[in-house]
Length: 223
Length: 233
Image 1 (tube, one colour):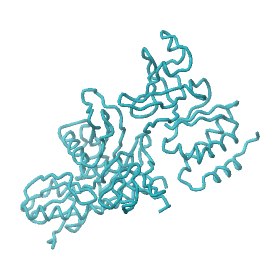
Image 2 (cartoon, chains in turn red, green; image 1 turned 90 degrees about the horizontal axis):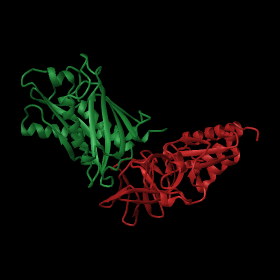
Image 3 (cartoon, rainbow over the protein chains, first blue to last red; image 1 turned 120 degrees about the horizontal axis):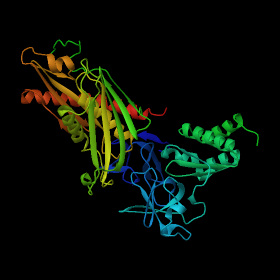
Image 4 (cartoon, each protein chain N blue to C red; image 1 turned 180 degrees about the horizontal axis):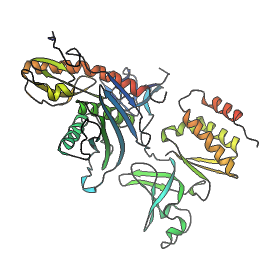
């Protein structure tokens, strides 16, 4: 079964003892059963269910775009669209921060790009100690369904690279569904936004890269 | 086997009302669904998992399922006063108990999954319609579940066991022994998650009613499955 199909909770995906259980599956006797609604996929003997809907579940290593919700004595509380707020510690900012002036670095309401550094019982910890991370000063932010992010990025970033090349914009896609577009002109940014919304709308189409190429051909703007 | 009885709606004893379902009707919710059975329409919206507030209701061992059932003021012929009342609080709890055995919230400690169920039209069988809609909405929200839940009522009119009582049969039928309403919820593999008996019924007839509802729940499951699979196409 290389073809992917939509499954609902309790539905038998496959049966056999030589298969491995991936995410969102459970073994009942010989059968492998889906535990959530999504796309069932079998590859290299691994059966898993890819979510199609629902809230964003943070994972270690994810790049996310968040908003400062609160400032504490030793860091910032960041809302990343997940069930729980994340925390960015003072120690994870690669510059000197005066303990009395946290709001001068990032104030409530500011947006930032961060990486999920750890997830533990106490919550999610963020870091901005890498290139491309940190406070967002200007540009355009839009929100899409977090489950569509893999399609927007494409295989090894092919889709997002195409959008970047065609629009002359710098685009950062957060795994939580927030996308930051930064271009020289507002027109470029709006064009990139239109392209991304097109990809999100057509996310279930196979051969999407060709489709988007056509879209750029039709809606082409002079460079 | 089933003794024929003349029902006001013209249905056979083991015939349920026409049903339909739709998933993804509320864009702002994490999961949503509509379930329609005859003149009864339920819509369900799922929000979460999110942090439980107030803090003292948090359960550090596992997540909580919280259902809120409400009948909209225009859902019945006489306007009903909106807002929670004794009946809606009770049905909220019943729906919670009917769904609790299938949802797996062990990985969401201190969190809550909110299910809001609204009846836009009520013509008896609202808790069943609510459970059906809520099960689809929970699946749509990506909540881990052991199984789907399909709910239907069976009952007794005078001496005959019938399926899916409507408003007239439920509350106005007074011939002979009157009516008995038995709402039930089944998982896909035929296990009961909820049963209520409202009235009198013999042991044999109860068994008969359960069998009848179990058979019908298979049809509801098919409709739910179809609604979930047809989303975004």
